[in-house]
Length: 283
Image (cartoon, rainbow, N blue to C red; front, top):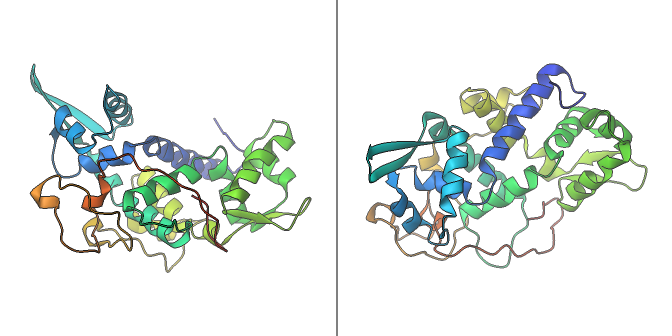
């Protein structure tokens, strides 16, 4: 069933990307996926990596990721259960550096260092605002559109002024801009920059290789640079060193490769807001 007034194939693409974002955006889901990237782990081993998730907080996340087909559960015996990434979860990992690359280029820069995983989490938060994906899709297709047109397209059948809250949020987030009341809306530089993110998510959701992201009919560009090998992608920012988790994850360099040991800070990170730079997106 169509959720927008976009053409059926476009509506299905938007729905797949929205669903994919919904799988990974809930808080700590990305960190759970990264914790399982190397090998299956028992529940206690997972909690050792994410010490802030206590009191049964990890179980709901594992269950949700399992329902999404990203994490599997293996019972070796009555008291020996391990969790692992499924094939679908493993193929999702290369999408995360694409999201982080966009975040490092376009998100506002806090006063202190930012971990790669927080960049991913902050970017996902912006993209899962209500109606955000479909609004951004329409604006990318049309270059600019009135609020009335956007309402009729992304929320058909509803009262058209309901489009203003999500539009104001996208403007506040730095992804959309307008010259004033009654003027059309258009993507900012950071909104246009989402091409590599939406292209990668669309390819993954459709079961295609990430190299197909540059061929996306809306977001693809010939020069889209998709870092398909997460092990070679380099973050320009890193959090202060966290306690080592395993010898294989230790590093003595200031620049960290993906996945990096700073992904698993042993404290839940705060998210301070600062002013949005010109052309940037708000955290």
